[in-house]
Length: 570
Image (tube, rainbow, N blue to C red; front, side):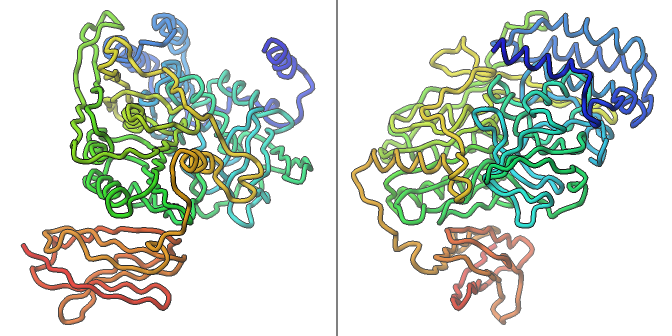
């Protein structure tokens, strides 16, 4: 480690920098981009207010080695001496960053959010989860901290393909560059939250390499062939179709539908293993859909194992997982809870605020292997769900630590400024004095994408999980009849008021049309009109604006057509 650090110092103390990032007066650029902003006296009031809120209410000082008074003493004199709007936003960004907690951040909307990213924009971007319309490629850190391209569209603007490796920019490794960026008080634009433990924090900044193309002149790429090329970043200064990346690759037989339903499920092609993606716990009906997915996989398809993929989960309402969790457990599960500060002058004095109970139905349980997939982009309610699943005797965790943001946030709005902070911290009833935020999750099988797997379109983490399930179960992998044919299921509930769920399955990828008609044959609404990959799907039909009566829903998928009747009863 000392040798690496000395190398880092030598690289950045050199006076022979190439034309590019190190030749620019970034301090002046930051100051001139957004102007002076508020008077210093008002900036100090805002700074003092935010510092005090954290000092009195922030609930996650446990497991954090930080002198909060020293943070104030570091930044307040700088503001007092006069800083621009951009520098002020950056100071508050970095003050929050020192708390290393995914719920806690400061945003100047005009600076941190509304500023377009064009070459030379003095913003740095955190995270590689989500998507964009310039770099348009998913990156994941390799063991040497270079970045593996695991997904990219055809005709990528700089020709990136899965299996290529991003080394850095302007001849410097990204693993050094991002640390240099963090010393220069650039305002931060959050593409992803920054993790609540050291491993997740590092992973998120490394994986955000592509998001920071606009600060450099050239990007250094090692092609899959082994050739190293240095390409102008100006080629990325074109608007592409928005490209989403989630550190996941498609699993045959399982739809990845993140846009509308926040979860999707299916059975892995050629196996009897159920698979559930979940991306957040926000939708009002997410509890019902999660329950229905588990109920179908366990009690209808009688799967031989489950994979619950939480590698990307932005949180939400943890209690909405309870109904589904009750299907998995046979015995009572240790309670999880949240605590808040009860003394504004003692960072560690806490009082219980919420308790999350789980009382399983003893008539149902799942006693087969359950693989839980974890990663640094799983936060908040996603963290809590993994913690709960670890109480199941048949669960193993694959991937990397989650964010471990076991917290709940509160928001303070101050004109154009938005400040979020963690005002509750999570704990387990098994050890109520041990708070969970900032502690890394110990995974059973630490695994990430490999070059050869992404080149072949295979998800390495899923492969490892499937192998474990196969080796843990007395079954042979066989293709299931449930995905060998098209099927349109009867809606449920039926009769309904005002919403119902329509499910359908596709044995092959196809253009899909799913429409609702009234009793006279008039089209009422189109529920689906797009290309879908093979798998199981469901769609919610909301008939609150319609009158009671008989309706029909019709699916067309290639040469397959089917129609079913449903009854709206208000």
